[in-house]
Amino acid sequence: MTTVGLIGSGNIGGTVARLAVAAGHDVVLSNSRGPETLTDLVAELGPRARAATPAEAAAAGDLVVVTIPLRAYREVPVAPLAGKAVIDTNNYYPERDGHFPELDDESTTTSELLQAHLPQSRVVKAFNNIYFVHLHALARPDGAADRSALPIAGDDAGAKAAVTAFLDSLGYDAVDVGPLAEGWRFQRDTVAYAGLYSADPADWERPAARNAEQVRAALAAARRYADS
Image (cartoon, rainbow, N blue to C red; front, side, top):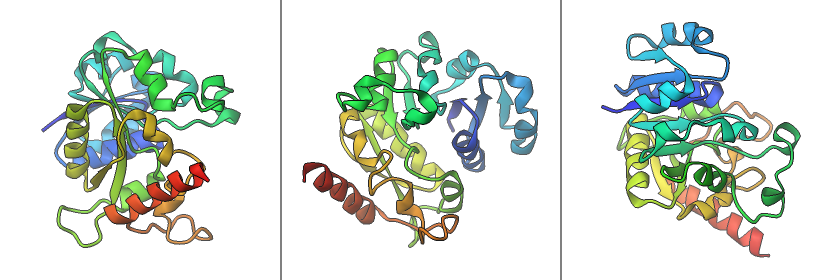
C-alpha cells in the first residue's frame, strides 16, 4: 500500500485521509499550524496515521495531496516533492485568496500555477469538485452499481495512472479530462463542480452518485457553455 502525504488536513484533506486509512494506506498529515494541532485527527485515524510538518509529509509520501487555500500555494515545499505525483485539490476563491491576474484573465489554471511552482513534480488535479461530505459518503467498492467517478487532469500519464489507482482504492472511478490546462472544466462555477454530486440544490447535504458517463456529460456541458 501507499504512504500518502497530506499538505493541508482540513475538510478535504481529512476526508481523503479517512478514506485512505480505510483502504489500508498509511497517511502523514500536516498543516500550517504544526503537528501538535493534529492530535485528535491522528487519534481518530489510528496507527496508520501520524502528524508531521509539511516538508516531512512531502518527503514521506509516495503520493502527496496538496489541499490548502490557493493563496498559500507558494509555501508548498519544492525539493521533497521532486519526481513525485502530487494531487492538487485547489480552487480559486478571489474573496479568500486575493486576485491572481493570470487566473482572472484565464491565461492559466490553478493546477498549472502549482505545477510551475513544482517544476520537478507531476501535478494531477483531483478532489477539487466534490463537497467533502459527499466525498466520504459516495465511496463504493469496485463493481458497485452506484459507484461514482471523479475527474482528473494532468500532463504526465504515469502520474495520472497512479492517481487513478489511488482513487480506485478509495472507492471511485476516474475520468481523465486531459492535460492540466483542461482542469478549468471542473472548477468553480461550472456544471461539473460540486453541485454535480448533490441530489438536490435545495438539500445540499444529500449526495447523489454520478458515474463516469454522467461526469463526462457534465464536462462536455462545461465545454459547450464556454464555447457559446
